[in-house]
Amino acid sequence: MLTDKEQLEYLQLLQDEDYYKCEQSLSHFVRSAWNIIEPGTKYLHNWHIDLICEYLTAVQQQQIKKLIINIPFRQSKSILASIMFPCWTWIHQPTSRWIFASYAQDLSTELSVKRRRIIQSEWYQSKWGGKDKITTDTNIKTWFANSQEGSMLATSVGGSITGKGGNYLLGDDVLKTEEAQSDVKRKAANDWFDNTFSTRLNDRKKDAIILIMHRLHIDDLTGHLLRKKFEGDHQYEVLTLPMVETKDRIISYPISQKQIQRREGDILWEARNGIQEIQAIKEEMGTAGFEAQCQQSPQIKSGNLIKREWWKYYKEIPSYTAKYQSWDTAIKTKEENDYTACITMVVTKTGYYITDVWRFKVEAPELKRAVIQQYHKELPTAVIVEDKASGQGLIQEIKRETSIPIIGIQVSGDKKERLNAQSPTIEAGKVYLPENAGWVVDFVDELSAFPSGRHDDQIDALSQLLKYAKEKGQQKAYMESTAYDIDSLRQMLEA
Image 1 (cartoon, rainbow, N blue to C red):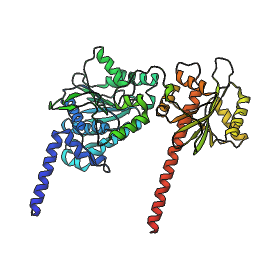
Image 2 (image 1 turned 120 degrees about the horizontal axis):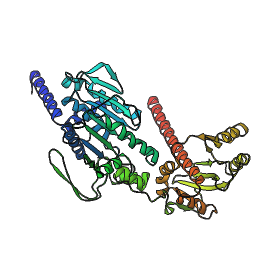
Image 3 (image 1 turned 135 degrees about the vertical axis):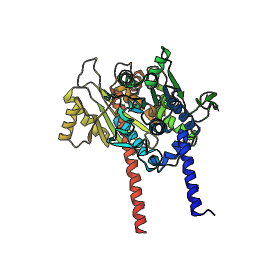
Image 4 (image 1 turned 180 degrees about the horizontal axis):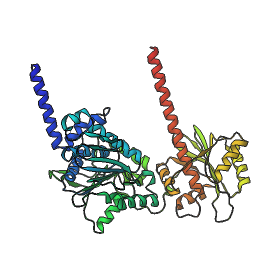
């Protein structure tokens, strides 16, 4: 049995070993620092962590100047690249200056706070505090500096970084998933990267740019930079890690030259997502979303977001838990204008059953009467209308003059974005149409033709209807789980 002195000496030996390994290995640093930012989550190692750490180390050693890592969500990509790597690099390069960018300032700030938490931790300061002590005059959530004039600045796409420069520029999820289908928003993100972010390198001969993201669209920032590489900019090194391997391949580590054999069908991180979980993800996201975000292989879309064969049909409506009506309003009646459309839908345990579609060209007075008539015909739980343009006046009048449960909702994104967000639900066979209703042919034709069709009123009504129904379902599930927790707690207290 060790004496107290021997125990202290052994403890010191272990601490010295940890100190040495952390300095030498980013992967070991990740393991040691994990609990500082993830105290409630046990560290779970996987081979891809070592691979990513070695690629990032190659950047720090100036073997790679421009690096793109494409990897699915929830694979610890931000922890590795945006949090651990900068903190580890400050051990070796305390004078290095960093600029980080994400699609939203809130996300960028959250990552910045975690970086600062590691650097200010007792564990980090006890080992490297002599050169990496954060100064008091520059120490806020989005921007802090150390005693060696190194700094870390967190911004967002579109944010101003005039006058700022960095030795490392790191983009982490620079495009929001919900905005990936917008040509305008994709171009804005790509232009900001080209004309603002990438120009902030202090020394273009030796400083580095890192982009880590899951693919969203063939023309997302990765696609944009790969196209530039094809056109002559050969500096970008690309590491692509799909959730499921699509072919046999050998992956080489950039520094150790270690090789790993990957077979078709191999799962990236099976302890996190096995076959059943991956199948569920694919059903939730739809084929297009899964291929882009999980497989890092976005496809060129044929033009039609919704395929005819995705629809399911029913003869009888099963028992349901809620009924909703959704209106897309138009108050002009010229031939080229859209129709006003009302879709009624019930929510069941197996999916969403559309029971009726009302579609006419009406002017303002007839519109209010139509809303009242359709409500009394179907008696839905809620009537939803987009709260802008012609919908605003309608909502106000209905609320003032009737007891109809009309709800104004705010929508974001363009028509294509909104429908694309709901397409996985349709592809998964969760939306049902009646077999013999006269309106079904026109309904399916319009959805199948979009975005090249003549009208899109039913598309808007359906998109907001499915979104609203899902959100209400999530709220109900949360309330039920919360009520269960409260009941359980009450029983424990009374026991």
